[in-house]
Length: 161
Image (cartoon, rainbow, N blue to C red):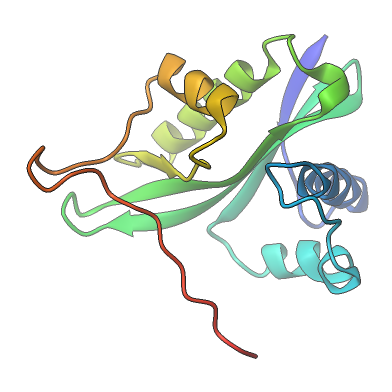
């Protein structure tokens, strides 16, 4: 039986599940093939707990951690409403093919509605065809204002500590 819960970052069991699932994701090809750093494993949950706009959904299959959706609330200036950014999303390899990803995304939709959000944003690697197919199937699409200016691109600039 599948259950989706809102992670309580003050609950050590929930924190352990979030870190474990995220570490599994990080070690896979779509997460960079590297485990989370010792620093991240030790501090992620306490740092998320400091941020009232951060949240996570955990999918439990028969009580076992099976999937994770970490999100952060942002704000759309054009709509003048909050938005949710799906920051990390994964289903554990041993639970794939059971529809868990779709159910996690449906739960995220409900979270966004409850928060009054105008949209959900996410980033996906260009070569992650399985994820792109899932996102399209559940209503996501590339973002563009007009066809002549093209789709939005996700860029980053790392800041040295």
